[in-house]
Length: 240
Ligand code: UDP
Image 1 (cartoon, rainbow, N blue to C red):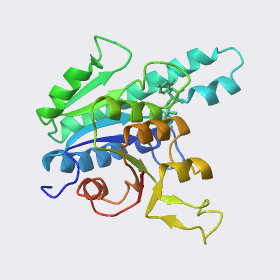
Image 2: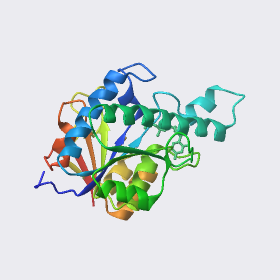
Image 3: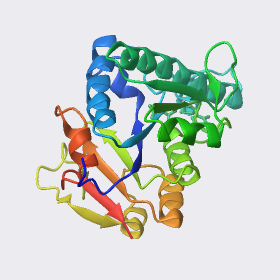
């Protein structure tokens, strides 16, 4: 890892990482696969913060659209709590494979985990602990992609790594058009102008303002997170 271009990275894992394809909820065998990959990165000496999504349990916007009796802000808080549930699962999976890890939440819940405190988060990272950042930003109406971009800026991460089930960014949906082109690199502006489905626009704007590259890659291939951290050219790199 000495050749790694990154000292500190922020890994964004969506809720879909926590369940089997096409299912919802949490499958601990899937969380274990993720934990094994994170362990390799931590052992190689890269400082790693992980922002958890919650879409495998609940997304505020979708839930409030189909549930007339729920207020949209309430639904978003439920979504944030879902990211804490995933954070707890990932924390235990990491501890189970011997990784030193701390869970911090943007919504304080003293009996469950630490609150997010920038300085404390950074001390953990410096000591080689993986830090899971849950509950997004702590405010409704935004996504964990935006939380990932904001936290990356706040803790001075060198890159945002977006773990997905596709191997990068395509000009069109590759499932619909087999001739869709996969980008090796692309600019923030192009992603925004073309409306490519990478992260939401707010997240892209924050990464652009903070000049933080985003790497979109397929985490499902064993070892891919470590490969990205080592600077191997896999997936798509979004930059200036
Ligand atoms: N959420 C929120 N504020 C935040 C982050 C997340 O209100 O700062 C809510 C929002 O409702 C979102 C849900 O939490 O839909 C779960 O996060 P997300 O949809 O980003 O999860 P993912 O798609 O990554 O699984």
